Amino acid sequence: MAGTQSRRTLIAAGIACALVGGLASCSSSPATSKDGVVTITVNGMPPMTQPVDRKYFEEDIKAFEKEHPKIKIDAREGQMDPKTFSAKLAGGQLEDLYYVYFTDPAGLIARRQGAEITKYVKNMPYYDDIKADYLKVFTSPDGGLYGLPNGQYSLGLIYNRDLFKKAGLNPDKPPVTWEEVRAAAKKITALGNGTVGYADYSKNNQGGWHFTSWVYSLGGDIALEGNDGWKAAFDSPAGRKALQMLHDMRWTDNSMGTRQLLQIEDVQKMMGAGKLGMYMAGPDNIPTIVKQFERKYEEYGVAAMPGKATLGGGNGFMFNPKASPEKIKAGIEWVQWKYLNPERTEFEDKRASNNDVPIGLPLDRLFTGMAQVKQDAAHAKYANVPQKNYKPFIEGNAKIQQKVEPPNAQQIYAVLDGVMQAVLTDKDADLDKLLTDAAKKVDGILATVK
Image 1: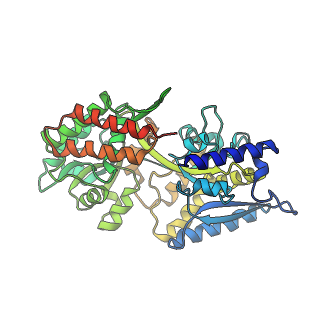
Image 2: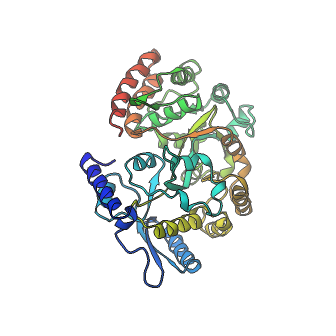
Image 3: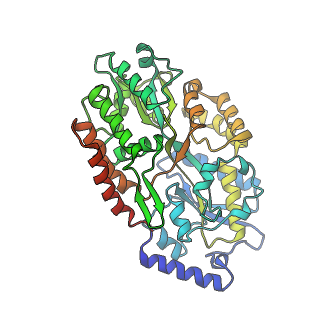
């Protein structure tokens, strides 16, 4: 993320701060005003081009400040931009509370570009109900906590319930293994009229993204960190099995169609036309299909990723390493109240229901225990989509591991696109050579991870 020089500048600044009493003393603005009010800067405010979301955000700030008269929120648009992050931090322009993706925290923690918040979350409401996998994303190797999640996604299988019925399959019991996916895809393809059983991406880094989830689901990894740094790990039985399954579905079963080099828009169009049985995606794809192609929510179901794990991601907030304890505490109050607050779910659902927003999709399931029970109850009360269609996803996801993207993910995906393209366009592709050659290229990409 940061260049060598900017990292040196940051480290030097950190040492200087520590010498005069810790990083908190380097905060760019006073922690509190004379009347005891703490003002925190936060990003993540929706832009003007999203008027409804921005209106809700501004309403939430007013409501929060009314309930917390000693905290003021100075909200800014934007999220964490790797190109400008270090310069903003070194120049004192970084917000006290900043938005990150799940792929960011490990590097930020290693470079000391976030504040540890472990001691400040002990009494945070519902903290113990946050899923451990998501807290782990923000945890350092020595166990320190540096951030909190506020959204997540995980890949599963979107499927056409009507095509399942026509093919003699039970839409309430979708496939739970890749072998079952393969068998179902053959039956759906046999319906004819251009129907395709299963489709997958192989273009614009999306193929590499999906290959990663294939490998995860089969118990493998894309990259692993050892004493010598990060190395490619997909030249493995899991990587080989993923390619063999794709090859056999494409060339032996002919259940993936003849048109390849697809990306998400192509596959959504196939699903929207009623010509596709299944594809790998998150539940957020369903509203896109329904709205763009004038379909009905009842037509689609979501299943969990077959196998042992799925590729997941998400976002959250971390804290400026220069933030004072007062600002960190105030920031935690804001994140909990706005994003990790099952007590507000019913209010939010009711508000959203007036703006044609789908309610009841299995999104942002950050909790376990009573917190999730409360959220589920609120979603059920205001649901305007068929929640029973998503039961296989919710139940299956609870049993498998969610794994985040590898370091330098987009560069790696570009390499793995070629692997996906080869196996889906060349019947005689050498699967072992594809994996070996790609692993060498990815090792070079991973060599730059710091």
